[in-house]
Amino acid sequence: MIATQNVSPDIRIHEIVNQMIECSIEDLFHACPDLSWNQIFAAVDRLSRTGSVGLQQKGRGNYVVQVGTTNHARGTTLYGAERTSRV
Image (cartoon, rainbow, N blue to C red; front, side, top):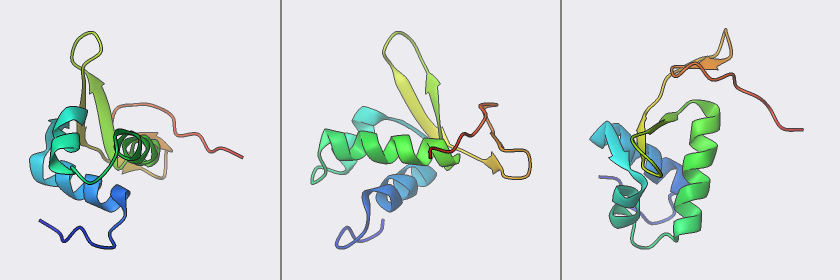
């Protein structure tokens, strides 16, 4: 596990997901007790937009965060969603 001091939430969340392969947002909250729910959600949002992690619905209101792979040449994530850039 990486040291938490001076490490961005994005890097921490990415490391945890890579180690666990698949986890819930609740699992991330328990793994990072020093981060707020908003920080975790924002990090997952940013990482999913770049394809670093993927989100999969596992029932009503239940989502799993998974290791993601981005095909930068085609601009799509492993899960088939088109990447969009915000201006």
